[in-house]
Structure formats: structure tokens, C-alpha cells
Image 1 (cartoon, one colour):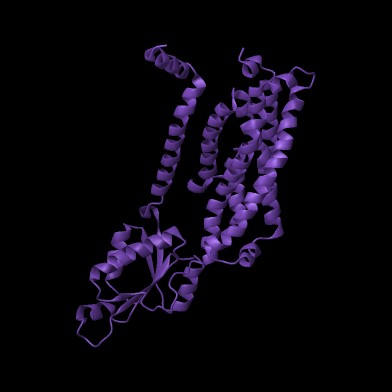
Image 2 (cartoon, rainbow, N blue to C red):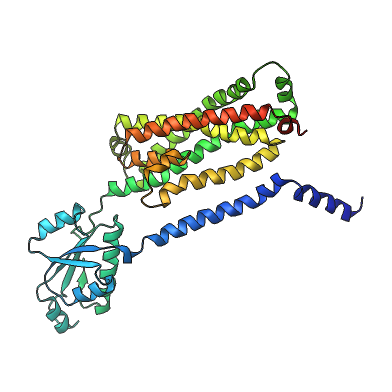
Length: 383
């Protein structure tokens, strides 16, 4: 056969197979969606959208320059004399920040010279780096103050605490954003490793056709696949989850005791129930793809695309700010969203129960869809 004929045959096989075209094109579309989503969220936290409420102790013309830099009408100053109470309000998140200028700050700057025996004037800024608004103001203030070319010191006392963000708060934020995503991906990987061979493999070898020739109900065949595969996958998912939970304390620089002690029994129970409910859902999703494919190789290609799609859904609630409770109705997202709330100690039992219930309902619908696919000669035998 001539080279041109061989090439024509391969091009014909590809461009006349809608499934292969989708497999090639869909990853690019999903990547575009992911990066567009992430870029939109990163640009959504614009400092110009913040409204700063800042306590000030002492006097300086620099406050007006900072006010201009923050934007018209974006910054409100409140002058205080009780510094300790003001610090506490910054720590509690009641105000954006506290600036403390040394006495006669502007005069000392004007008269300061490196040869002088007098120390540099100082300004102290108390803020919370874990809060976007507070940290944005800190960056604006330090940028403006740096224009004075080292004539004073900012937060120079190494023994004093200026950043009031708690390590535990930052750890919870990291955990709530990363852990649910990793758990879902680990569950998907565990399910994929055993589900593909069970349906696509039997279909390719012809053993599934033998089962279909019997009087067994298609629904029973679907359940006979989904239930045991879910139980096996749940073992791998639980193992992955346990490994992540035990390794997270080292990642965020705390002890296992402190990490575990921050969550009650109900939190762990709800996390476990969410994981148990999403495992059969993911198994059913992969099973549909595996049933539709004509071979294990084809099923593997489709499942790779499905995994990217699941990754997108797992990232939505992490990257979309102030997402509403309506996402409870969307599979995958509902589990990630409720897990994030649990890890942030914003536990809503009704959200968890609704998410778990919907996962069971969606799994039932997918099992019904698989049973219908098993009854289709076109899907099962390509006729």
C-alpha cells in the first residue's frame, strides 16, 4: 500500500470519528476555562475596590499622601490616643490597620541627617497579612513612606509584633483551599485505576456481551459494577485522605495534635460522609465513559478529559470569591464547597446533608443511564 494511501486512511479514521476529535479538542477548551477563571479571580481583588478604615496615632503629612494613593473616598482615618485598644481592634478585624507616628515625626524627618546622633524617627503599622484589605493598605502605606528615602524606620522593633494574622488562620485558609481539591483528585485516581478495566476491559474482551446475553437485568449489572467498585475505591480514597491529613501539619508548620485538635468529631464525621458519598458518584461517571468507549485505550483517553473537567469543578469554589450556596446543587462542586466550609470551621450541617443526599441521587441517575446504555446495541456492539 502506498504511503499516501496509508496517510489518507489514518486521516479518514481520525476526522470521521467524533469521539477522537472531542478527545483532542476538549483539553484545550478546559485549559482555557481554567486559566480564564483563575485570571479573572486574581484580577478581581483590586485594591481600588477596598474601603479602608485606619486608626492613626500621631501627626504626619504622609497620611494625606497615603490617602491620595489609596484613591478618593477609599480611606477613612480615625485618630486615637489609646494605642493598646486600637491594636486589639486591628487584631479582631474591626479596623483595617493602625499607624503610629513618633512624636514630631515630620520635623524630625526634615532635620534628620546620617551624621546626627539622634535616632531615626519611626512609624509603626499594625495590620493583618491574612486579610486582603489590610495587607493591601499596608503595601500602599509602605510604598508611599519609602519615598522619604530612609529618613525613618518602619516596624523596626524586631521584638514587637506588627502582623496580627494568626498562623492557625492562615493554615485553615491554605487547608480549605488545597485539601478538598487534592482529596477529590485522589479519589478520582483511585476510582479510575480499577473502573476502566471492569467495564471497558470486559467489553473489549467480549465477556460483557456474554453477561448481556443472559436474563440478568441491566440495572442489576450496573449496580453489580458500581457498588463493589465504590467499596474498593473508598479504601484507596480513605488511605489518600488519611495520608494528606497526617502530612498537612508538617506542610503548614504545626503539630499533628494542634492540627487534629482544631476540629471536632462532627467535622471528621461529616468529611467522612462526604467522601463516602462522592466515591460512587465518581465511579459512576467513569463507568459511563467506560461503557461508551470501545476499548480500554479509548476509555483511558476519555477519562483523562473527564479528570480535567473534575479538576475544573474542584477549583471553582476555591477561585470564585463569595460563591453562593446554590453550588450545593452542582455535583463535585457541592462536595468541595462543603468540605471547605468544614475546614474553615464554618460548619453547616444542612449543606452537608443536602450535598450528601444529592450525591446519592446523582449516582442513582447515572446508574440508570448506564443500564440504558447496556441495553443499546449501538453502544455495546457498534451496530
